[in-house]
Length: 380
Image (cartoon, rainbow, N blue to C red; front, side, top):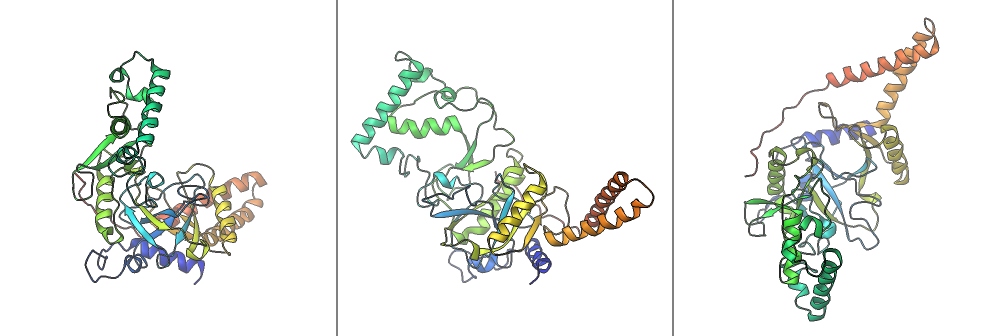
């Protein structure tokens, strides 16, 4: 299959928003891998030195997108990502938003390490070991005396200062009221509240007091802090929750993505269908992202390179073959430069050519078919 054909086929999968045949617990439906092979796109930008990759890594993180969700993927500084073959990946668990998997036990699918009930470094675990408990409490007391004075009472210390939290933007955490997935009551937590509860449970008393807090900033994505993950057959529930967060005005919809935890393979290249770079609204120049994607594709065995259209008002295919775009630009530039050389100085001709390229691309966008989005009620 050519690069152009693969881009068209994958874009068609992205537009397939049907949940018919989605796997559910206890049903005879096809596996999640079979469903993902024809619905949406499974992508990762977590390589080679970001997200969950490390010397002791057992997993890496990916995101699943389709047209109703939009191009919401775990970001990285490079702006380059991989399109994965869902039939070859080993999916361990899912999260409706970023799951903070680097801070979780059980290879990203267990409770957070500081969870007071079940975390490997939480209160229940630490308090089982008298030595560990003694040194933890001693450390906290020494830290308090050093920074706030021996005579200062714990309750007189502001949690923002005790945990040295940034004064402008706080991370927004969320979970369920009963700390598991059986409840539908979503609750939000601030960093000071959460840290005070989890670390105070180890010491045996509150470490500080929560005062006036700054709002969660526009760049702070909702981070799931609940104890349990979702099984692969719970995809529909996961996407319903994600869609609710996207449409909930109290959260930042542009900073929401689901997280798939995938077992780390011996080799990554066999799982990859192609390399992509995001087109707009990303740090760094587009040309640098494009060159980085081409280098990565060559390293993986000359895989196809795609541009992912993440523009807000883009209505065409989400993926286009980079070769096709490069060829169109080259032909347009050559044609208009030739026309301009006979009637204007070279510099002016090149400027006219670039304006023609921009008009050409704008016309191409307008000619793309438009697709209506599904409206789903938000989580309450």
